[in-house]
Length: 323
Image (cartoon, rainbow, N blue to C red; front, side, top):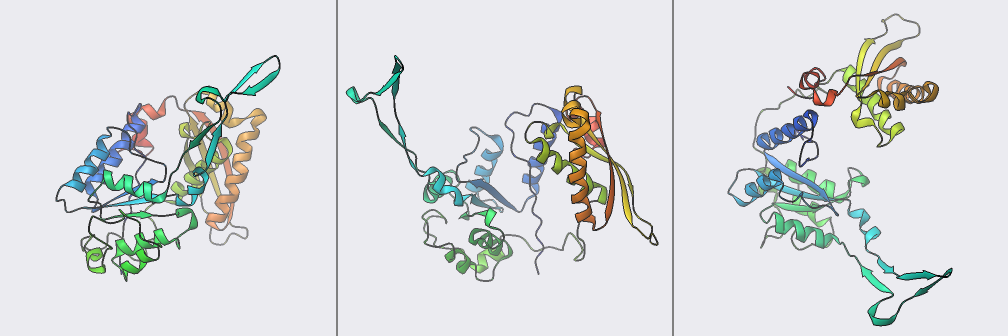
């Protein structure tokens, strides 16, 4: 039996502009210091931020004789067909209500070829991290049975039959493994993560409270309903959580939650005309909460302004973002 703790860090922000982003980057640095394995999750189209300090540290770990292993996962390989298309650029000129193509002097129709392939992406990351143990192409959207996800799982838990998991990826791609290496054997995979006592009891599902999950569910609905317009400015706090009593004929969880925003204008967006937007959020959130808790839920939502809460370290501590 194996217990792995995967620390999913926030995305790297090159120049944090307020206290919350600074706290997020401290979380990234802390995870980097404490990790036994550094898993670089990228995708087919991404490259590191130029001169990024943290990625520079990953490269140092990869270059030095460090005890930690670096593994790269190139995700979204299922999207390769979307960009590997020949595009035509046509230069047009309009005059007197008509348009015409120019074909003289090399102008006119121009073929623009943009090709991104899985071998290209793997080769690019192999140049960046030449000593990475493996660079694994994956399509996480296909779920846990995706061949790349399965290869990563087998690699981290030490088998069984890690070489077969890599063979299941299909034809070998140059650069997936270190120079002169054709695969990763079970014995090497077993030594990636050091042996130690489990950090959590076997029957422990989470170290988070029911209030935490309720606030996250409500916040997720804000993302759905408001899109990219506002949610990063929103914080959700569950201020009251009353569970049903054992002998209630109609058990129901009674919950009060407050959505905090930073500006009065943002409050207006969340509340919506005549309160319709926050009502819609409440309806969908209640349905999701009932599905999660497997019982009826009464949800009372309110919206308040907590001016510049993302820039205030005392408020970030109260909200649990920083220590």
